[in-house]
Amino acid sequence: MVAVVLLLLLQVQANQPFKDWKIQRREPNPKTGQQEIIAFIEGDEALPLNTTREKELVDIKGLRLRYFTEPKGPLKPSEEVRLRSDTARLDNEKDRVDLVGHVHVEKPESGTTMDAPEAILFFKKRFVCPVDDRRAEKPGKCPACGADLKPRTFTTLEAPKTFEMNKLEPVTRLTGEALTANDDIRTMRVERNGFLITTGNPLSTAPPPPGAKPAITEM
Image (cartoon, rainbow, N blue to C red):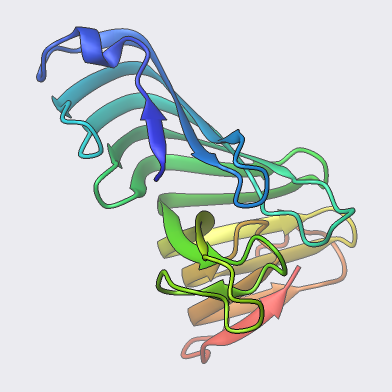
């Protein structure tokens, strides 16, 4: 079960705002059982609306959030992804953070960035085999080895309105509406008006063609 460590939040009453709010989102590693930090969430000001354990609901001003991607292989490291926005709402019961206003997403190692008026970060729970990493949507036994499947959080990012994404190597610019991306923001689906530039200036202002169909791409 995912734990949200509330630091100072549990010491205050709901509907009482306070400054410099911080939490850590943690869960046990399916293989080792050791607690791992999934995300750091901070805000200039936070207003707790519900402090019930596992149902925490918090409105945040000046959000700063960092999470870590799932390693893509046994020898592959996690990547850090940073997000910030003017305001946000953390809903621990629904495992999501809704970001509003000047949303900026950045991968420091690669230089990939995304800007949007709104975004949603989901902490989606799936179940994995601690032996061979098989994944399932529901708890149970691994069909291959019989081991108990363990819960694991997989992060996804959505931009329900317009967005602009830029990558440095190779120079790439992607724009459109209604983006869904995996945790490392490499595999993406664009529902409307997707427009990809892979050469030239990534800040080109060429408008996307109207009526473009949904597409899945990698950056």
